[in-house]
Image (tube, rainbow, N blue to C red; front, side, top):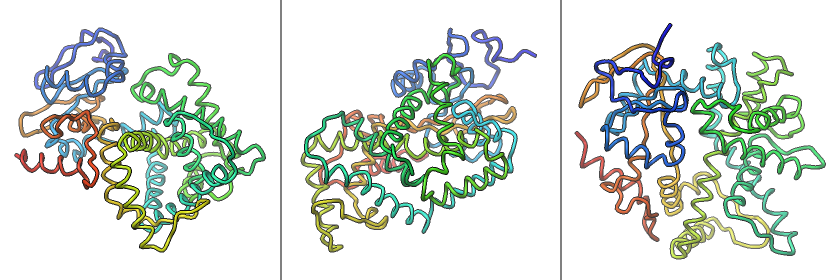
Length: 407
C-alpha cells in the first residue's frame, strides 16, 4: 500500500488540504530547523504560508493551526484524539508499549490525576516544603566554604532532588547522595534528547541515549522503588494499577515511572532557572519580591533565621501576586509547549476563515508560544518585561489583545 509517508518528499497535496511545506530530508523533514529555533521557524512559515500549513517532522505530517481563535476547533473535535497522540509519544520516548493496546489501563491511570487536586495537592505541597528543607538545610548548616556552579546546574539539582523526594519518598540507601547524583545526571542527558525522540527520530541515531534510558527505567522498577520510603499518594495509586496489568518484575513498570518523573521535573527546572536568571539581573524586581515575601511572613508570624524554618501553604503561595507575575513572564519567554491531536479518520475541519481537510494518520498541532513573541501583543517581545510592582504583566497583555481582536 502506498501512502504519502512512503513517497516523500514528492508527496502531492490533495484539494482542500493546507499548504505543504517542502522538505528534501526524507523522514526527518524540518525537525532539525524546528529544534534549532522554534519561534523563528514557525514565524517564517507563518509569513510564507499563513496561519495553517503542514510540515513533515520526524516521519509524521503535522498540520499547525496558528490562529488562536481556532484553537478550540482542534481541542474539542472528537475525531482528533489526544490519546492517539500521547500513546505514540509514550512509546517513542519512554518505550511504553502496553498503553497503545490497553484502553482500560489508560483509563485507570488517568484517575490518578485526581490525586493532584484539592486536599491531595495541599498534602503534596506540605511534602514539597519538607523536601526543600531536606535538600537545603544540610548545605546551609554544615557548609564551611563556598561551592560555585552554574545557575542552570544548581536549579536542575535542587528541583530534581526535591521532586524525587516529594513524589517517590526518601531513599533508604547508604550512598544516597551518589545515587541521586547519578540518577539526576542520566535523567538530564535523556531529557536533552526528548524533543528528538518525541518527533520520531530513531533512538539509535542519538548516541548512547538508548542505554541511558534503559538504565533509568531499571532504576525505577518495582524492585528498586521498594528502596524508597514514603511514596506520594499518586505514586502508590499508579503502582497499584500497574501491578494489575503487569507482573511485578516487568521492566515496563519502570518506564511508566520514568514518564511520571519526567513530567514532574522537565518543565519545572528550566522555569526556575529562567526566573532566577531574570531576578538576579533585575535587583529592583528582586527587592519587590523580597518585600512581598517579608510581608507574608510577618502576617503569618514567621521570621527569617538560621536553618530552613519557613513554611507556606498553597493558599499563601497563591497570594504572592508579584512572584506569580515573574514566573508567568519567565514562562512566556522560555516555554515552547504545544498541543497535538491524532487524526483518527479523514475529515474536514470547519474553521471561520476556511475549511481544512485532514488525513487519517496525520497530526494537528497548535503552537501558543508564537503569540508570546508577537510584537502586536508584547512590545519588544524578546525582552523580559516584568516590572517591579507590576502584577501579571504577561496575562494582562494577552487579555487586552484577545479583547481587541475577538471576531
